[in-house]
Amino acid sequence: MVTHPAQLFTLLLLGIVSLGLLAGALYLLWKAFKPRVQYMERLDPADERGTLVVTHRARPGKRLMIAAALTMLVFVFAGRYVVGLFHEGGDDQPELYPVSASKIRGASGAELAVQAYGHPGSPTMVLTHGWGADSRSLKYAVNDLADQFYVIVWDLPGLGASTPMAGEYSLARFADDLDSIVQSTGSQHVILAGHSIGGMINLEYARRHPQKIGKQVAAIVQINTTFTNPVETKKSAERSRRLQEPLFEPLLHVISWISPVARGLGWLAYQSGLAHLQLASSSFAGTQTRQQLDLMARYAYRSSPRVIARGTLAMLDWDASDVLPTIKVPVLILSGSEDVTTLPSASDRMAREIPKARHVSVTPAAHMGPVEQHQRYARAIAAFVNDRDVARELAVR
Image (cartoon, rainbow, N blue to C red; front, side, top):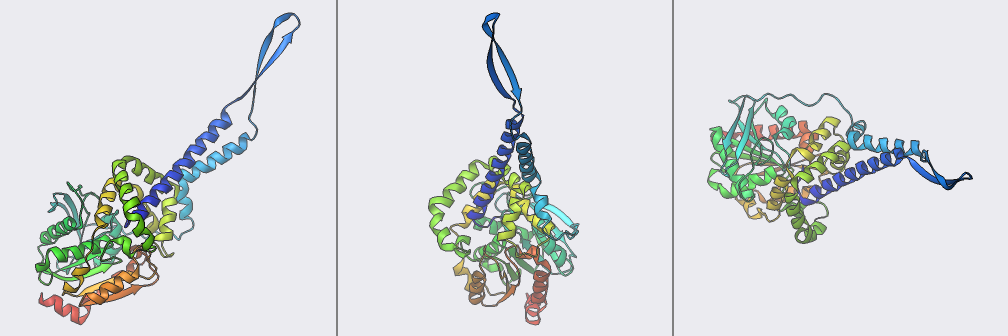
């Protein structure tokens, strides 16, 4: 999953490394099996013209080159299985069956894929996934929440089964699409929940549709997210800030232009396991299963780099600091104690400035906490909604 440009660039570099290893392996095989030819001129006393004798010899180190090449090929095409051996396994991926699935026309013009889980009579929660992923990344959360909520998930434009937006991507257009989802529920009491960019979209929704906050939208859940340009609230933000205009923005445009190539590199990064290693070190806290890691690593090639680049560009000039004090409904803010993609300090500020905010820090958890520690996140959300004061506010909306 991509939240800021550095993650996307790192993924592409890992794909280039994998491509280099593939090229090196093919070169070693070619070198090993190419015969070594020697030409010697032997003079025959009976023939003054001489005779040219050609000999073929095996190259020294042939077995070593073949072994090295095969090792590199195994790494490139099966490295993800090797990485998986260092993580606990188990059949922990839930099989989900929606009670309904449909496509609706969003305000942006995109066809939005929508699925619903749980009982329609339960409180309605609209859950938005993070950028670069799709609603499948929420399967753990949905499985935990569907017993108590009517959970509606959707694919953001251009991701999963939703069609891309026409024109420029922006948080405002995402928020208007979210409003299309909210209206499609037909519910008078909706809880908005969002992970990463999903939380950013919730804040933009509050800016663009303030009349619905406190009426149709009764509560908000912000999960490992920020209130401003994600570059500003990540680890090493100062360095990333300096690189944004001269490096990040031009490279995002380039990635958009070479999207098929970038997608192929992402597939190589996934197959080699390098995408898994990147995610394990930057987005998980060390307790993830191999299935959880592989689920998120698949987005290295599942999602269109063109769409990811366009959406990432939209985040770089976004800020909702002014929205925070205007939100008058109960808000739960969840953060991961080890999140370096969106630092917990961003959650601290939201908790200070949103009037009815409650902040819960999950330990240990990084940016993929809703996957890795899904049960803890689900329990915190259920406790928030079932709290006497919050439940009373929800009941009167």
